Image 1: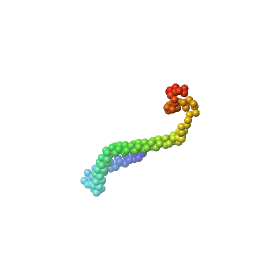
Image 2: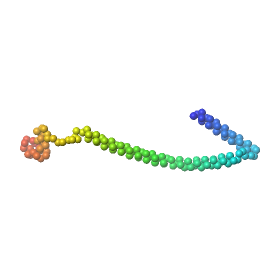
Image 3: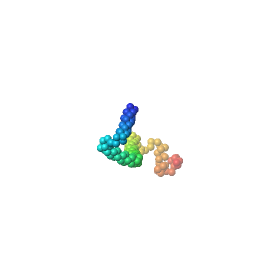
Image 4: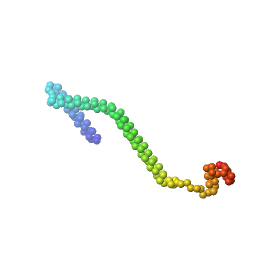
Length: 136
């Protein structure tokens, strides 16, 4: 890379020196070398200058355009992440329901006499504590 840069600089410097030498010779002799090429080169230079101005105007708008593109990209990523989170949530609930022991849960009658009495009192089926169970 450094070698290329040095070669480019040297070539550019030699061409600039050659242009100044050509201009010096033209001024001393009073003639113009290849005027057709010079006119064409001037026209191309004007076109290049106009292109540079247009590019500068577009580059001034580039930060706003990039900001909008980044904002839309982040918005799309956030929506995708939310959609993924929602689908993962649904799958987690399905898995929890699948492995849960309460999936086919049916109430059975309690085996313990104490629990039967407490259930009767709670549900109002008891005889107001006359069977030896105090109110809870």
